[in-house]
Image 1 (spheres, rainbow, N blue to C red):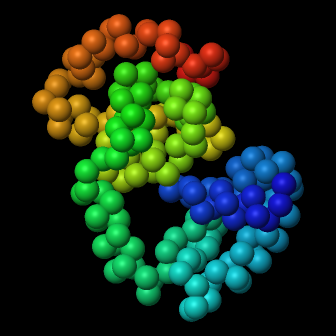
Image 2 (spheres, rainbow, N blue to C red; image 1 turned 180 degrees about the vertical axis):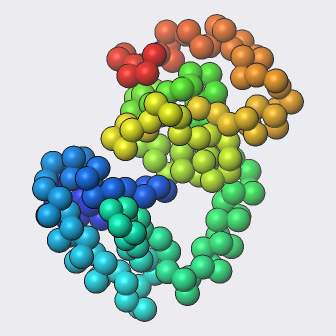
Image 3 (cartoon, rainbow, N blue to C red; image 1 turned 45 degrees about the vertical axis):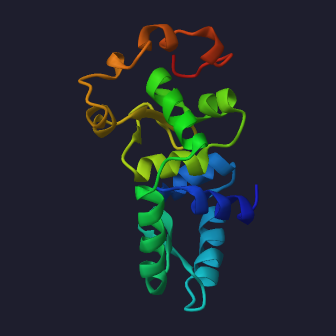
Length: 178
């Protein structure tokens, strides 16, 4: 693995990583992770850049730069309050009927990478990572807010929930959580 892989992980993650976790994920030593993080920190923590690499002890995360905050907040507000797109609705339906479900299983069912879709659904408060999640394999379920918004008392009250929850067509070939 390379520094580019580390940079990509930092960019797509909405949660901080530990250097130990990154070391394990990228199959390189923690010393190499620290060296790459130093390089990325130096590169991004420049006033001309829109992103920052922030370290707190063993934790590290990438954020938007403070001088870009207003623009990012305005964009995210539109993203969060606007209507759901068809891919977001499809992903949300899979999580609602099959959750808790791993990200790889969602992607297998949908046939595409769902990282950004899941992040947007998390920002909207519709899905959340479960306690079954690991840094390597996040797992998702719908939130209580999602259930309450629909006027339900439980996700099992969704139309045809029992049939869809066990539907073989929606089942990944090798589910990692079910």
